[in-house]
Image 1 (tube, rainbow, N blue to C red):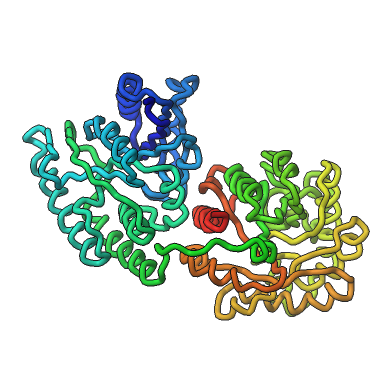
Image 2: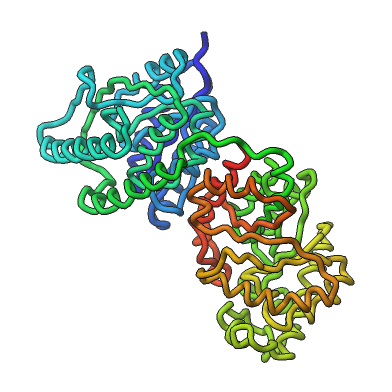
Length: 520
């Protein structure tokens, strides 16, 4: 019987040219020993300059090789995060993780495939089994012994804290079914060294079959991206985080949302166009039926990327994400804004201060430019054939005093008569609660203008981390409710020009996977 198809992900941090040998060894081995289809996905991660250097080296050799997928990962940092975003670039039924220095006998892959055929969902290498072997030069014995002791202590702590029975949770070679890998990444929030523990917590909570098999380690050098001293503090924090999640039932099965419950959730993704990864995340979630509304930034650099695919999603609603605080405004390029208005893009804090933190109407010269910019942005999208059904805004600037009253007549004239009010009392005690104050001030103008709006929820980081708990909260929503989100398949905002950058980057990935989890 032919081997099943296989995707191997290599997290390559600060790897430079040595990754070429790793990829060649893998390709040669798979060509000889794996009779199904296969691909090697290299997740290049680390500092931007190192990522770009390694990516260029890989592209120079493998750009035309369909067996090699080169994936760039910048944020969030960590081995687990690099695997998570690279998983979206895989396509085959079995998924394997292997360390970039390839310190294992690849015969593991055949043994792991046999274990999957016998019903295992997760197959892990185990260096503690009596059949496992280590081959290394004697000069590496001190460093190997140090890492071995750290590993024993770490595993003892994991077994004590979580009741996990495996004697080796951190071995750098694993293989699993695609279904299990999808479940795992939908629960993964530990992005660093301890990401492996979530594999075992999920398998334990969902009663999945895990098989440990012996491995042969072949250490030829002492190169490693792991620094034991710095890792100790991060490990303590990570294990505390995982224990908190376990106590909250995050690794237990939870019923999927019903069709009526899903209909109430009007999930709105903001910031379409700010970056390719943001667009990719929104499109995937829209195609899955999770995201119902997408807000488009008319002046963004990547507005057109995947736009036709988005417009083709059945039932999707598109809106203007009115933008005054990011990039170059449309009125600036045409020279229509005034010196005392929007001649220069204003930071959000500047606009808030000019409104006396929501206590007074913005200056008339500024409001005149804002109205003109709003018209330009709506018109620009409509001229592209985008049927707009609502508007909101980047950083919620439309809620500042005077803006709604100024732009509402033009919005209705252009056929965009629905907007957003951030009236979520769950924000009490959080920095975003200022938005509730702005919304209270804007509500009278919205109603006087005859604009419509929905009840609103603004989930925070806690909801996107405690995903099972959040899903339980969403299941209780009993009326159509707008829920804001900012998903992305990976963090890529640091690649943008300075005037288009945004501080909210890596955390968008947690939002993406929390939302992806809702589709299952």
